[in-house]
Image (cartoon, rainbow, N blue to C red):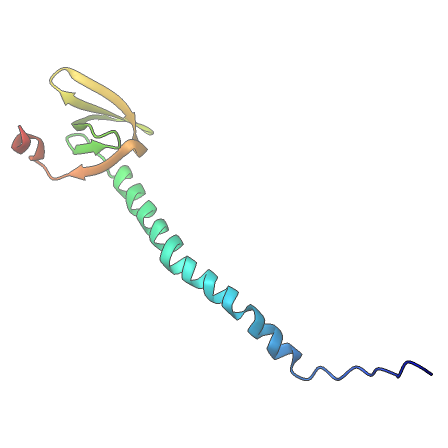
Length: 108
């Protein structure tokens, strides 16, 4: 015979080596979750709570940068008075920040 017999060695540590192979991937997913996903979910929850707590008389800033006072609150929309006799209707999700009371007077 020209070819010798080849015998497979027993895979004693293959289970441990297989787990160690995926350890960097698991660590990367964990870091991604704690540095990116979790803070984003927290911010989204805070924004949702802020939007649901909107009420008439709140002073707000919209995503577009308009500063105004909430005059009407609907289920998905909010009426915002930007100036005297100028009112716009925006989606609740377009509200970026709720300001402390009296902010508009202090700016003018």
